[in-house]
Image (cartoon, rainbow, N blue to C red):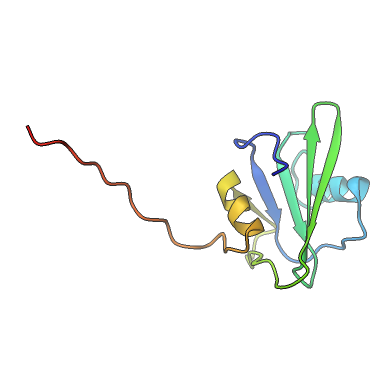
Length: 117
């Protein structure tokens, strides 16, 4: 995986984004449309209309990084929310990149056993 920091904040731009945009265009979207700072170190995720391409923009110490994943088959389960941006955790982004929904129910609960006295 490419993630520089698993504890980094993740923001998903809902809806479709023009994937002709590169670092400059996407950073302008982050600042203008999403009203967030592209220099914050957070991961900003964008998807195309066909849901087969994701771009992730982030600031890494001294410059922007742009990561891209294109699916050859199937589609990403991109969130269809009313909001312009959805905040996620790193593990939810991993689910999304693995083809799972970020809206899935919580996993199995933790069990705490004690040894008999």
